[in-house]
Length: 76
Image 1: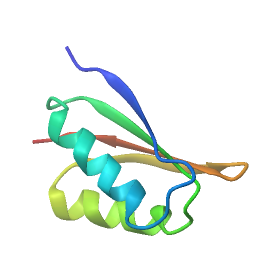
Image 2: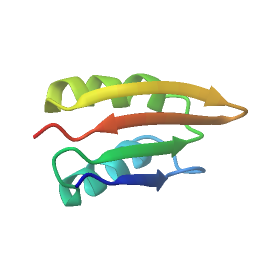
Image 3: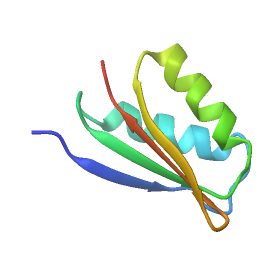
Image 4: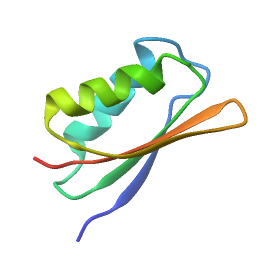
């Protein structure tokens, strides 16, 4: 059974949000969805690039106020 988890990396800066996501991704199970919350504008570009390279699924990215909400599914 897959889970949904929030990774709150607000108020951290590159490479902090991506490193937080990677740490949580290593602990997650295949099929789990992680939602990264980030106030670092670089995350909108860095995370999708890493997701593609790592072979996971990018589910969406949207900015709400000052916070990026980036959803990723662990694929392997």
